[in-house]
Length: 189
Figure 1 (spheres, rainbow, N blue to C red):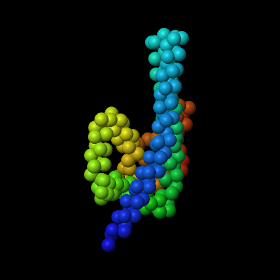
Figure 2 (figure 1 turned 135 degrees about the horizontal axis):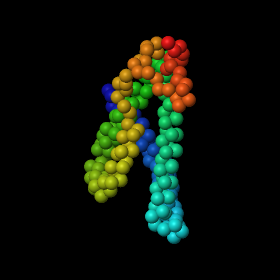
Figure 3 (figure 1 turned 30 degrees about the horizontal axis):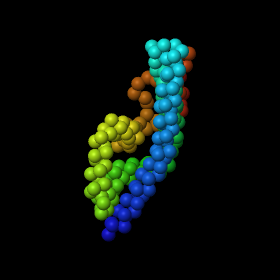
């Protein structure tokens, strides 16, 4: 009865994983090239400024890149939060998000089921386990990256728009206060 649905889920999960693997395979050569570029830059800086200052410059460059990336991610998260708050009125997004989160949580199990159902599945699984054991640092890194994108359970504390805030809103350095979350402004007493 559910066999067709399970097969459709396996096919969808397989195509999704295939799509992202293709994207990752395109990115890998660029990441390796960036690594060699950084190594070459480090050698040039060592020759010009000495090893201590060269390594400090490279570390400072990566710190600057990390700070810019952190600010960009923070801005994007704030924009998504604003858009999510606006979309809550329709409440259709919540249903779609829940369905997508459930599908993403079930995708690894569907892939494992598809792998074990194939004739060469157990041997491929054993070969994959051996490869993962040899490359354990890379596996840990990929697991940490996957945890960044893993969906949360959605049980966040949500407050109605007309509720008073529990804590005072932080002020800005110029003395101004951020607008109230519900868009209403309060007068000082």
